[in-house]
Image (cartoon, rainbow over all chains, first blue to last red; front, side, top):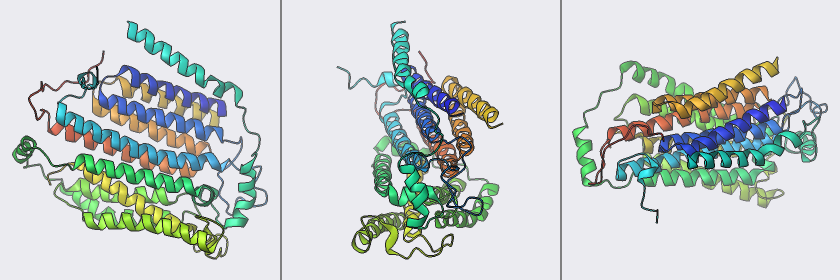
Length: 118
Length: 236
Length: 95
């Protein structure tokens, strides 16, 4: 099952990159960034999966002593938790840039932004 | 045509770079390395029932501090970009369109009813972060969505920006202060063992982990509310 | 059982991802991206990571979609530029 999840994540990363390279509208590019982020997160959580494992939370169903064989790796979950919040912050920043670009240039296609080209 | 060929070649190169990921990573049959140490010793060392919380807050606590810093930077960037002084023609457009449709009464009543429930739910999530799935980030996001409901319902509603900035600044400074207290009273920076570990599974257990997560929850909630308020763009 | 569910969710995610980039209407594309995040949160639950599932459902599916829609609405309210460059507002242009 881990290979299936890794393949799904990898295909999402490919879709994100493809959208980033072929679309010229700023909103599609930002959506592609978001899809790319989601794909990478799926890959990271998939790597930490132990077959037949359950969530790493101790309660009546899972005692501390017998936990080592039955529990999913907690470290990738912690890393992806941080990464999801950072992805939202960067998306919000990109969107505010898009708003300012539209307010000053009047169009949303990146082909119009010619000021940095030599 | 040329561009399409280049895009296909670039994609193929990226796929080739990711390919060993699919073939050379085998499925884990059990935990290895440091994960076994965290699973075996985590509950005894820190007293938190939720292992992911103990990893996020104390074992990898510096990453969480860095993430709070990144969120703060992004919020500052968004607020600076979107509330700059407007040029004259834009203000004229705004004045022409200042008569907007009022929000529907269904939305306004529903938002007023759901707001205290959502705030309570968000506070519950980040207070119980060390016992059940959840924690500071999830609770902070639920808090921000409670404010989001209120901001949706009425375009004329203004939030108290001073209170928002004070809450964000206070919780950020208090987070670093708790880390320094850990340096002074316990093993190292952000070590949560300076408060008693208590009884396993109770609300007031696991040292300073609930305290840190409460501060993170308040900070994330106020920052996301600030971002949403800046992006809303209703008439000032 | 788990394998079948993950396959189904994966198919929905990939179709949603391709649809988000192909649709002409931007609001539909934003909603498709939000649904990709939602299905990803279900996959995280099947992989034994409930914290990540909660965070992804709240942030990726709800707040990201809301932030996108807010900025789209804000752009729609000012369709003309403020200076005298060419100011025609184009629809989603694809090469």
